[in-house]
Image (tube, rainbow, N blue to C red):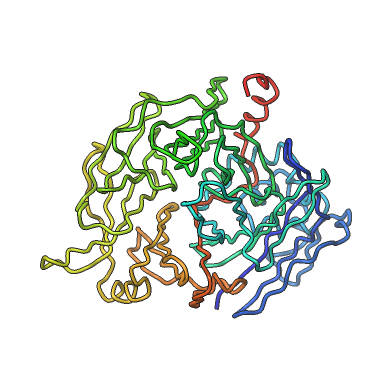
Length: 474
């Protein structure tokens, strides 16, 4: 019986150059649900009183006379170790704990001691019509999401995301009425989700921290594109972005010609959408996600299958041959603890090789693959029966990989690389499209990304500083 909790927004927020939306303060108690019951988070609550945490207990080892006298720095250190959902619960205890989210000293401590959590974040979205260049796509799925007018008179979307904790096998939901209409999530890194504009032309991008509601606007790209592949790498001291392919050579045609990169770091180096070396000839990029590892970006190439790699330092592209490339179906690249893993179904019907789903890891030489896992045959038979040739997507986070069957099934398998354990993920009872039930009238897909929930992403400060000091460069 899974638990489905709600993470509320901690404060008011806004986006540069777009309408500002300021919701009321939310209380920080959590509502749990079992089976299919669900209670929406209340919309308003009085601020917490100015109090000191008091522990009342009859247990001798939890004597309040002892624990109430803990040094405040030690208490802060304990709070910094809490998982993000538990931290938000703790903020309701007293005014001081409530304000820790705005304390620079606490956030610096948090960045130093907080353990990294490898979660997943999921969105629902309609399957885009890629045959029509001129379109206006929004993410509203019609279930608890809508649109409203911001303070500046513009329209902002009310989007919902679903966080999954693979360690505890729990779902959390979070709403963020802040992203403008016409933007879609494209990739994630370092606790930030990158949203890219849907309209053809110069792309606008936002870096969004769903947990705390912060949004950072990036300068627009310099080349018009349709649906490029997007890669993101965020560290505490740098931001790297790459957009590749789908160059709009005319209002009615695209071609995979170039890529653009954005870089900024704490040493003062930055480049704003520089054009990289040309993409390899005859490459066929399907619009999608790019994975990043050790200063290199990787994305799938089609017809026939191969992997395109880009080295940031040498500004060079090259192709890596995929294993069993003529017999792969729905190949996906994922990043797992710094390793690049290729996940694909294998169908060699004319040979005496059983159909299966396999995983290969890219070796240190950067050109060879080694098989590391096959889905158990009985499980694959069930998986294949549900999938029915529609295809699937994969995403990796830490030592976990999620395999998502495309709509209308939207079932999800979780694989633990360390324990070699396969489990069907529990259903998310908030939305019919997430429940795993078949809905033949739905074309909504479940889009997932690796996610590390964090209270602070200091690299976004670098982008704000760049916007302030180099506005003329944009």
